[in-house]
Image 1 (tube, rainbow, N blue to C red):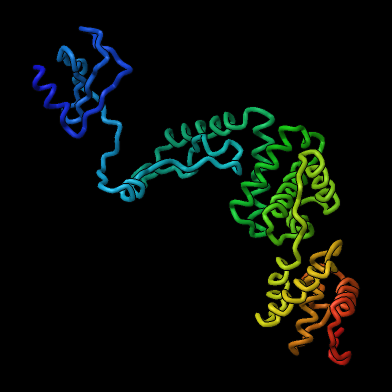
Image 2 (cartoon, rainbow, N blue to C red; image 1 turned 30 degrees about the vertical axis):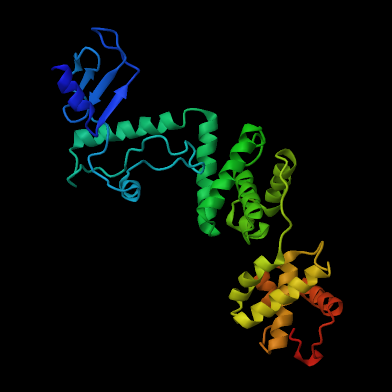
Length: 324
């Protein structure tokens, strides 16, 4: 190939210079790669260095940046909620080939052996086995209390930090996983109580609370103050309270926050009392027992918060409308 032919190929739109390689004839680094012919040519002496080159680009064409982004194919992103972050290969349990036909008995036995050793290789250390059990428990808890994937990812990060710091040693994996999930919910502002997560877990509420306090102390977490406004819709939906009443309850809670009455009070109890007051104002018949069961608190708590809100905010409610 002559120099003129090389110059013609250099003018093409698919020409790129690779400066990392050297021409074996003249030691020049001015190498030209022609994508049309699949050849690598020296730009100085015209020597064809390579005649066969693999095109590592996609087989499709894109004319705009949006089309290129929509057609790009990549693997699944790494996830902290998977013990190996989703980087390993999984052999499926389906004993069928690409055409849907059943595998022969010999091939099926071979795949069973490969699957067994593949599982063993993924959890070969104690840390991997711990993470595998913890991530499985986190996945079960998240599905049971309807936790979104981003919050589950945060909980997995919290558990991994606790494992790196040695906080899991000597403690229940389920308790630490439940405490990490509750910490992620508190950090994200999700309306999930410790009682709900403990009931979905396999451990006692006291153990989950103890592990949660340990995570706060050792990992130096600064949790935001729980806002009772986030619990209003949750309590109201269980009792089929109207939207107008929910708006009135939110207004009561905002006024209580402005007057600094809600400081140090249980947010669930305040939300329940505000909904009860709003129901009385709008004429919706509901008892303190129903509100307390929906909020997960006692009737005494609802009654005390109701009396305190009524006194502090000077809310006028006829006594005959109060339902016990």
